[in-house]
Length: 328
Ligand SMILES: C[S@@+](CC[C@H](N)C(=O)[O-])C[C@H]1O[C@@H](n2cnc3c(N)ncnc32)[C@H](O)[C@@H]1O
Image (cartoon, rainbow, N blue to C red; front, side, top):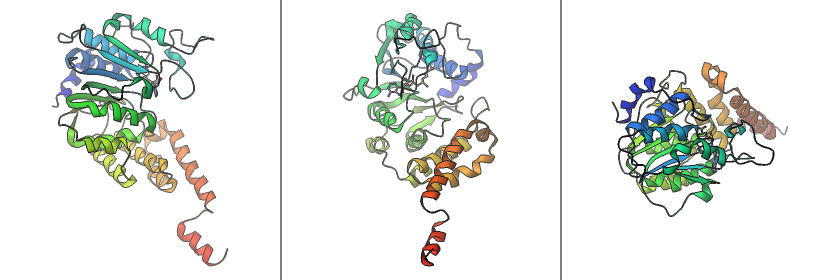
């Protein structure tokens, strides 16, 4: 059993209070966050949550820390990063307001967040605004814990890599909350690149993949991840390596192998190779889970492929060459 794996058998018995704020993450993931705070983290390095939203995930982790016999509230710090406001491009929802809807004259839910997290404010440091602005490029302090629920775009993931992954040391714990999201393939191929230096905790917990760093991560590996310096083929191989390590999630509901196969299609899609993207995605349309949950993704890739084909005169490359040769 892995070091973090010892928390899995405790999941069923965690009872979180009703006071926990609305969260976009599942109750399984909230319970795992609680267990990490209660039984694993020490608070000697930075504890960082990227993408706190309305505070559901923050609350679960903070509650665990508060009940921990080793976390010292006077010295330990939990850092919460988020826009704490709704608006175009924030990926935040109006449900993060206590009332469940945005007031007419205010787009910030920061005060609601503070109110809900009141019991933990003595050890909570809130960083409100765009991560590129609120994170410190010169901070090299070790990160003991990193909850990543913010890397919805490659641009934000670059910030996560440059400013947080570079601060991981052996013993650091990372949680990728969006691991079941095929549209975020940077989470998957970067994890593939880190495989020699990490120990995956066990099956993902719903959408969350957890791992512990077990060896120092070489600087050049982090640089390549941050600079997105892998070729498409390399990225596909890195994702394939992760596919070999994980299968169904802990609850049995999410089959990660096809999910990661779909992520490969998005690698090609983002590179503008829509034909290759669709050739990877099309066979997955018969997957029960993906067809049920990701119909919009298939539609996006199919449409991009068809538009591309139409723009280039349709047919295969060979077909186009033949047409050209016969002058049609
Ligand atoms: C899925 S939500 C977080 C959900 C939360 N962990 C929970 O328990 O419900 C993602 C959050 O990332 C934040 N976010 C996305 N991009 C960001 C950025 N560049 N800077 C700061 N926050 C960002 C959004 O404001 C949003 O609240």
